[in-house]
Length: 323
Image (cartoon, rainbow, N blue to C red; front, side):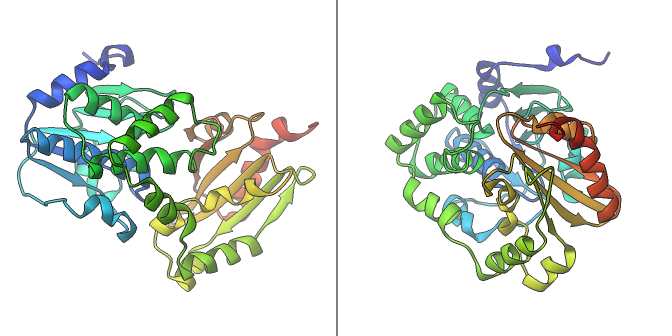
């Protein structure tokens, strides 16, 4: 008999108990990994290792060298999984090709996305948390594991990157309290924020120039589009991890309430939407088969660029017209 969402939901304490009792963990990250999925995964990895467990972090895509401070003590081991845990993955579509064999085998999902489809056997979902790393912080605390600077830095990375260095509207007082505690536990916050927000590769700068050259405005300049084409990716040589945050560019323009990034993929366009407080990005993307958060959401449109733009404009029209 299929379980309902309510039957699948479990508490932080239940998760801590599951992890303490379990053995041989595979921890899954989503494709094109960002700071939250990686920080959550490696924070949990080190906590499990401190309990004497075997654990392994898996991702369909390579992990950028800029996360080296959290991966430097990672030890790759070969073993069959006793428990499979997905972190920061709302939907199995985000697993990527290499992790698809596990999509029907996930024992536990820990997440903060309201759009989570409850694909796992058990789900710890806190959709008011600014980052999945905040939830992992609670789990590690409940597990009673002694913190160290590497664990604290991993969790801090997840929170800092998913909040835009504590600038986004998803930040709560709890986010700051957790961050303050992570400072006390040795998180290398200054270094992390420099790497994540103040350092850009030459390929990233070139990509930003090309994205800005594609900028177009709609609805009396209250909506801005940029395009990240496959050709631009090839020309710049930019990696997936270096594209983190590029979708924030259109919303940085004064007066823009909705910023939309069209990233070309095989077979269509990945759409990333960032909005002001007055507009729900998740509802907009929901009209196009996607989802996410109120201020940041996405979807995939299997059309050419002209049709993809037309579909987004049609979804935006009821919200933007008359503003």
